[in-house]
Image (cartoon, rainbow over all chains, first blue to last red; front, side):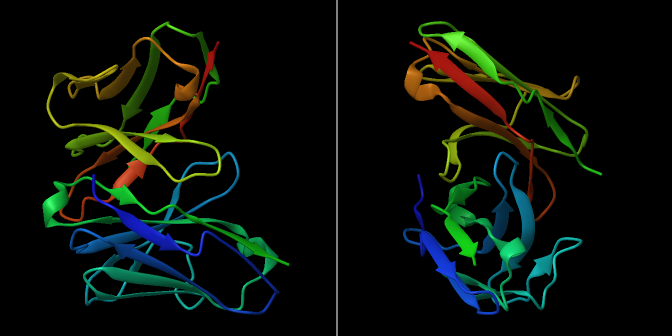
Length: 116
Length: 111
């Protein structure tokens, strides 16, 4: 299957700081990337959808000014959690698909964010 | 609202048995369905995809799709302790292929 790399795997930060998470497709062109968050024992919650070169489309209830998404190239998307607070602590997962993946979605390894 | 429903479990089966996981969906426009396996603290891993009615087999895994009844299932034959994980069912449709996930079923295979 296709490979999606996500970094960092985990991050601890102080309240009020910003954190950037990177998601890269290593062996395919990711025309669409999705960002999810997952709380313990809960399912994946879609935060936003980004198409390369376009502004991200955010799901209802997700603050676009707090969760900045950039998808500037066909292999890289970033999620920046601005002014993070303890309630933003969660497992963030990116996923990607492209013309060569036949609708299948491949996931990055996830980032565990802990805001103190 | 598009929904995907799964039995939350937990589902417990003995080693070597068949584990049966079920999923129903509400959006008749959904065309593609996927089963993901997620170990605790890890991201989901694609196991099976199915697009047309009937069965699709891959090793010990068989996915079944019935669009008339709007259900998808996953059978795991000869279950192993390493199969213990949460299994997520997902459906997609539309031009953006946005997946809608179920809440997942926790499977435990007992040695």
